[in-house]
Length: 449
Image 1 (cartoon, rainbow, N blue to C red):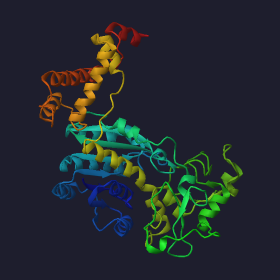
Image 2: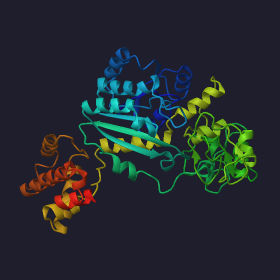
Image 3: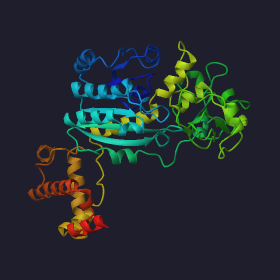
Image 4: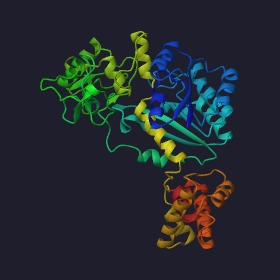
């Protein structure tokens, strides 16, 4: 799939989608330092431009005919770490929606802070996208469960033309890991579950976790680990301390152990503890802040999902901190990208949500076996449809009729599949208070209670 990345920043979203298998055909950002970092690390296809210039950028993107538009509009106007006053930056969420509506790709992917879901800017953007025909999956994901050692909660909105809302929710849930990734998982160094790659230059990293991508392999890489090998000095200090300090939000905790995720990265994450915090530490800190390690810029970048060796040179330290904080973590973007590609290829179908079987039994008089059969037929129809969940029921049935293999099925089977989709649609379209399977009178009584 061909992708265009808006508000691309230093390249976290593009890196993750490239790893998933997308072709990034163009990227845009208005901040020159970020554009230079993107160009150096991701590729020359990035263009510096103000995305509020809809009249110029819109036709350019449309001419590229992307399959997906992705991006993270600026979040400062919505963020819990900011003043939460919607201004010019919030308006860029509307600009994102306008550019999607102009280019009309089959898919779009938008990232922002969870607070954006309740903003006026997103309400306006959402209305535009729905009117343009996009079904929406709006999910708040914690990056720590998607390969990132950071408890970073973000809103992801995935849209696809012609879909029902919520079409990708179950697969995003299924892609979660069983436990959050910790900073210890990221480090890997000297912690047992690791492997050695001889570093090209003195002082560079040599030990890598088995749960992360290896560096580029060369002929000289295949050497035994020296008995006296020591981790990178910064990582060694962090491992020895066993805990690290990050500047907290307001009154939050500042010290965390290696066996938990880091908090969400912000520009000031790696600042040293201030006298005020040292004098009045958080009661749940596992050790005094002055004994905890202070993260390096490289470590914060890795916590945010940038690989070792990402070239940040040429920018001020403050600008680099801002670029890191603004980024979409690449492992999270990669996971979402794989979910999208799998659905595009028809390799996954949405799970049947809620109490459809109970509704069939109590409202339609189905036996338990007949209800199970109906659910099985919905899934079979979804597989024939390549995982699609059409917003228009007429288009859905027409697509089923045209699906490969449907015409060769026995007439009775075809009829059963059509009927199952109609029943599921009827259940989905009922008011939530009546979906429980109770009779209308019972549902009313429950609501009154």
